[in-house]
Length: 333
Ligand SMILES: C[S@@+](CC[C@H](N)C(=O)[O-])C[C@H]1O[C@@H](n2cnc3c(N)ncnc32)[C@H](O)[C@@H]1O
Image (cartoon, rainbow, N blue to C red):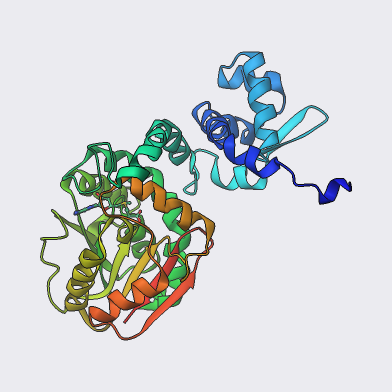
């Protein structure tokens, strides 16, 4: 039989051992391997010395990272792949190293998936609905780089840099990354973030560090009950939140946004949006299980879900926009 025509176990092997890949990436990040390579470490010995690893450990780690395509090797000299250089070098705003570490430490949660799939309810106490959960303090700085492609795409769609003195409402704004980018590109823009007090403290420090803190204000509390105001904002933002909420709660929040926006204002929803028919894209489909594990009602929602909910909340013009990341944008006017 022609070898090319035979079924190969390659894909199943890759998926079954996917935890190994996450472990290798996180270990590379924990020991700053990508940063040492960026700084000029080139051999197993260099990496072992600079990262404080056993030579045997450095060899195995570099082998694994080459196997994953995150590191390249030629004649015994190693360097970061373009992906690792862009997203795993510490100190770059795009660095996803903290996210890789967090996901690795969170791996034991996945051992509950068989049980949670049976019962439909999370086993852990620390779900998304808990007030001032310390979990967010770890998560929001780690996911901030993930929002950058969406923030830049939305800014282009809205001509934000030249939009003048716009007023922005960021609900569940987390680290404040959207405010850092949008206020950074438009010196007349101002933003208000509604989030838990413990998270708002992080965002206030982050926006101040980036020189936009004087145009950033926070409101502490649960966005289900905090008043968003009426006719005060040009842009509303709801990023990586729809997936933790029920359909009814999303409609209720969209109604509050509609009231808070001036006529002609735009609501920007950023999330892992699934195609109608739930055929893809892959990451949003896979992320639904993270929501199953972590929340009582969350999931990833389809384009039709968003359109229906936004129209029920009074928006008439709903459009979908891809970004160079697994997240997509929904713009509603
Ligand atoms: C997944 S993070 C998204 C952060 C940010 N929007 C982003 O895209 O990077 C969810 C954020 O919503 C906040 N949050 C979740 N539930 C909330 C609630 N009921 N009231 C206020 N904030 C909430 C969390 O504290 C966290 O900052």
